[in-house]
Image 1 (cartoon, one colour):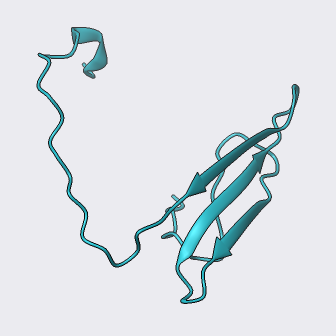
Image 2 (cartoon, rainbow, N blue to C red):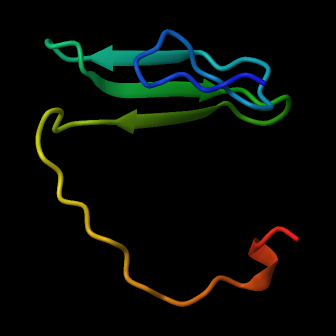
Length: 78
């Protein structure tokens, strides 16, 4: 089984797409600031996904999501 590489590695995995060229942009310090992936399905238009990142090296405040109850049974494997 193939594993996914960390951000910044010179490869990316696309499941179910025959070809997925990508562009990674870095800042002056070498931090990855954007990843742009082109997904070309067998039929249909080309899809483009761009992920941008910022605040490298800065502390992040992450809050737990609000509780909203249990998921429906069909979400659980049997």
